[in-house]
Image 1 (cartoon, rainbow, N blue to C red):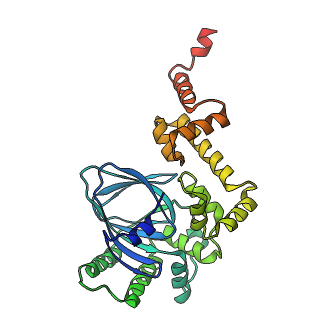
Image 2 (cartoon, one colour; image 1 turned 135 degrees about the vertical axis):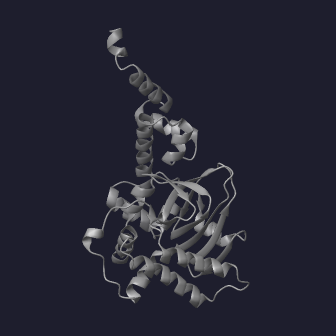
Image 3 (cartoon, rainbow, N blue to C red; image 1 turned 60 degrees about the vertical axis):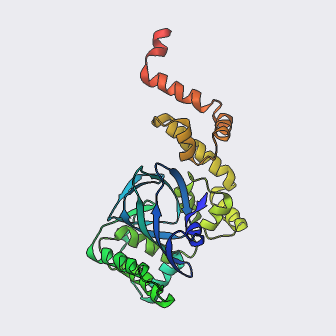
Amino acid sequence: MSNFYDALVNTKVFKKFKVDELLFVEYKCFDEGITTELWTHNNFFSFILNGRMLWKTNNKKYIVHKGETYFVKKGAIKVETFPKENFCDLIVFVPDDFIKGVIEKYKIPCAPEKTRSKIDSVISLESDEVLTSYFESLLAYFAKPEPPSSSLLKLKFEELILNILSSEKKYPVISYFKELFECSKIPVREIMEKNFTSSLSLDEFARLCGRSLSTFKRDFIKIYNEPPGTWLLNKRLDFAKFLLETTNKNIYEIVFESGFKNRSHFIRVFKNKFGTTPFRSKNKLKINISNPRRKSATN
């Protein structure tokens, strides 16, 4: 799976500014009707400049539109482009350590406990004049022949974090920032529960959790009492079975949305666990739904 941050750092297609792990990118997508999966080890803000795009997490779908702003937590999301729409957004990647550093530097007090909540990986930010003006000021730098200095870029990143922390209407993001500040290590459980349907490798999960592969495996087993590969397989199979039983999605859609890389592997492991193929499972469900009295009528 493509690491979105790494791909943007290495490409020459888009305009961008980078200092340390901080990254501003003017991203443009001209694909038509493409569905894919992306992941990043850094959080990012997205200010939609043009067009629409569909973003999917485990819990929800988001159709993002021009003029909207979102915060996306590090991890994986599935995206789908719309035909005949030239999607463009301004992306600001901000790593955990930088967010923690801003909170520490400016001695920002912790939010009251009542503002804490379990939030999705994608958070919509209510548009306001301050936030819109901030992103428009970034666009002005892209129009200049010379890039801004590294010190100025860092100040612009700090400005964004401070704008969020000073707004009473940005509670979900503020809550996430404060949780980052208070955690000495990235919580493995939260990362795994939010990203198990992505087709990330164990190396990529380890990077997402801020650990070496060996440390990640050791910490994972302490939490779940089984290896991450075994847990991921069972978790994805259970989710696939849930989709079979509760949706009208076809096998190809279920394979993709459950985190499996190919259809044949999915069918084999599904049969090994549940004793039947996903096709028979789905067909049996359709029969029961369409004619729930069929069994009793034939007895």
